Image (cartoon, rainbow, N blue to C red):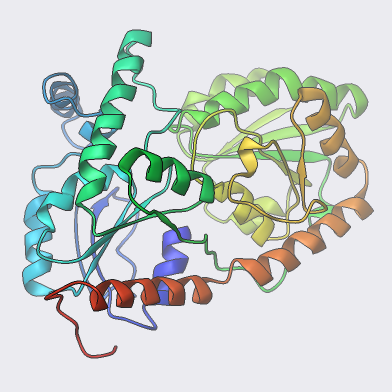
Amino acid sequence: MYLGALTRAMAAMAELGLVAFDHGKQEPPAHFRWNATIPYPGLPHRGFRRAAMLWHWGACRRPLVIAKHRHPGLPALIRRALAEFAPDAVLVEMSPMAQYLRHLTSVPTILTDHEAGVPDHAVTGLGAFADRRDRRLWSRYVTTEYRRASRLQAVTEEDATTISELVHRPVRRRQPALAVPRQRVRCEQAPPRALFLGDYRHHPNPEAAGRLVQQVLPRLRAAAPDAELWLAGPNHDRIQHLAAVPGVHVTGFVPELGELFAQVRVLLAPLYSGGGFRMKSLTALAHGLPVVTNQLGSRGVDAPPTARVLAETPEELAVATLRLLGSPAATAEAADAAHAWALATLDADAVAAAQIAELADLLATTPGARRSAPG
């Protein structure tokens, strides 16, 4: 959603091309003038891919997530893009794609990191020793591959500082951007339901969902017996066992988030690991859904306290959530504040203009850089 909103806005200011992994879920967006995709490495030939991934992790000393995103066919797509689309510069998004910077030496590049360079939630599933080894490999990967980019960006100030200390280079911040609906959801009309949202392949999400079910939901239902906790998002098979707990409803993937947000009173979204910014919280606030989270769960989300309540302990999270579950008026006030903040802050056109300006400055200061005519 972040990159979709950003690139749609950028497409009004520059011609865009796309090289990306295809998860088989949707066609490339129409606002890209040129595009080429390749199947996500984890989809076909799972047994072979798993063996290749473990080989590159063990023998080639790549972090496991980086090995998972290695595809021998992607460099050919990059060469094709350079020949056919002939970009002036390339935006490289997310840490796994930094491994392909070595194929982009002929053009200026900006790498945007979305999760603090060395994710503190990276787990291998192979035990504690493997996790410690993987973290060392992450540090090696970042200090080697990130330096290949002409410039570096992060999505929060905290991440920019962390990466800058690792690579000893300046790291700029690119603000989050979203398409904000003109009308907010009427969450105050929903039953007393709290929502947690996430992709459950991503380790911080099943971790947080489990804590909410075990530590927060019992406190909610002790004070409000009809309170429910909805767990939404793809790859819900990893948390399906939680559906057996009274008050828990596992929805799975919901394609229309506006409809989902209208059925709940609050997004309950603390996190206990992970870097980057919190797209789940930003998306909820953009729709006018109040958020209750903790300090880590609020990274990159500077909404006013009426709209985004911070709480740390299970007791504090429950108290803040119950205030909204028990009062439609309080929910409506928080929803108004959330939506007003989002309209004023998450404007994709402004973020796109800033990114175009950064690219223009990069081209102006790169000797021999190709610069197309405006448009």
